[in-house]
Length: 107
Image (cartoon, rainbow, N blue to C red; front, side):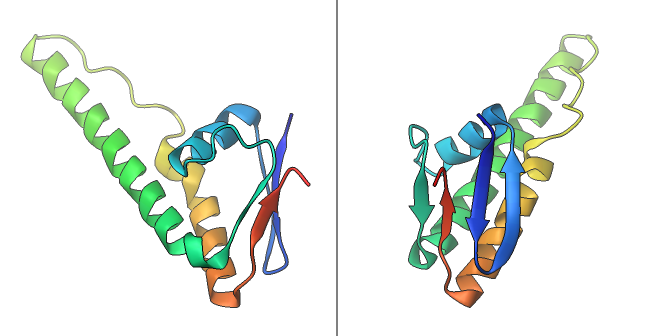
């Protein structure tokens, strides 16, 4: 199932299921096939996504350092990292928070 995030304040965002579930998991809404993010929760959602990006990048750097220490080639970075995947969603959250409009999906 494709996930479509909608709001009156921003254009629709469409994510493949795996990517949408990852974002929703970070936001604590992993099991929600449909839902809403209210404007009052958007600042916390942005912080959670930014923290997840920082954690993913630190884990990648740590794995590379450990591989180099063992004399091995570092694992390749993903072609599209979490930072690139969540950036449109963060922009939508920020825009919707300014406009005081909720984001919904699955409805």
